[in-house]
Length: 310
Image 1 (cartoon, rainbow, N blue to C red):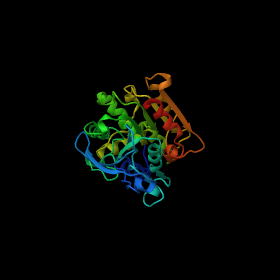
Image 2: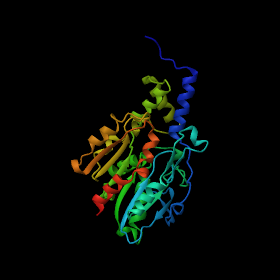
Image 3: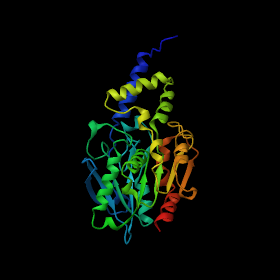
Image 4: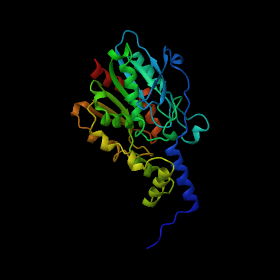
């Protein structure tokens, strides 16, 4: 039997991918809601385990409806500066979450949006290591604690816009502290991701398509203080979701395997058929286009929230 022996170049590539997975580079907070005609307040609050989190509250006049927003990995509350170096070398697509906030605000929704740990302007935690939800769920709970203890926000009707890592973190939080979600009306979840499924797809694009390559990557991530990719799969947590859920996903995402990841996530949701929805985004293979979709086409998001928050 031939002994597996990666090349020096392959080893260097695996270490580079592991480093990016374990400690993604922070994206800045760019712009402000006032650039889009919205007043806002700076807010800060602790995560459930005490990590300082920074964000914005964007009020809507005469509204008691609140959307709490949780962002993807590698991004901040404002999105991703793919048009700027050095972030453009990771992905050249600019993601702008201000457009989502504007659409929600104009539809009568208050917004709480913040940077998760190790992202944007929030504090560093866990050695700067990303858990793609495994640590970040504590931030989701911290946001709820802020709302529940706020003199005016505590009386609002709440739903969630939780994207990618933010969606993963929400699912994990629902499994660990379900009491926080009893009164949540709806969830919109763009592109939740199981790293044990998406990372092998990315690795294969670099010619690292053998099981041994994945095992080496897992070893490098663990040595750096992170998780194995299979430990960051979201499917085990989905059964705990009791909130009506709308998922959107790029159908031909080259960074993922949507049929074996998001389709399965959708099928595992133990919700009535009318309380779950999956929309495939077509016409692109680029994952980051999916993060812009609801900002550019907000109607289905607004309709989902309107349906359950009326």
